[in-house]
Image (cartoon, rainbow, N blue to C red; front, top):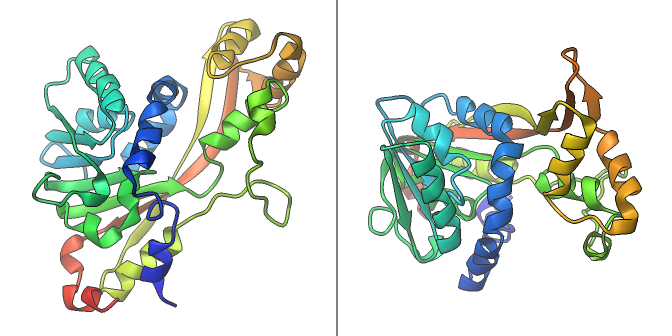
Length: 287
């Protein structure tokens, strides 16, 4: 199996253009809305990166609005948050300032795929990429860290499935969107690159570690109406589709023992960790 060729034909590697980066940046406001919606899930992801501590510097590659940057900064000595999206970074800077964090450097790069580790991309003790374009080339990414690297992505439903679950049938936009690919059981599936990434590293003499981070997109409020209002703000509901929207929400809403109402869409991420110093670069050159 030519794992390197498979990597080069994966989704991240096939989206290297400046236009692809621009499309990500256009979605910055939506990514900003997600921060509170997945706060506990994000914390679980960061906690799974166990090598991060107060003695380590961290690179958050393609950081977006800073969803992962913020909890990383609570644990690390310093975080370098880099991205090609100016609008993404505007949100990131505001989020950092709002929390009064003084150990974060927010940095713009032109395009991850054309930038070089140690030149435009800073080298840190630990490099982390969470569902980002930095996952297009695992060997290039390995050059961004002096001590350890992490890739995180979904083993279960991604955010687009959450939005489809909430808004399909309640506005024309979601009706026109292509349905996600389905597995044998009819449920949506995610393209997982874990096996590709793991085997590239293994073929280069690395012994990667794999763990998992469980969590959910969730919101809790005193009343059902408050939950509906919050979830409605994440998208758009046609005036005559409110009943359908509430039915979509109710599938994943329950009352807590404290009497509050909680919506939760559960998912999971894999956490691939490896020591870049184990890479045999002679072997890597022949992949």
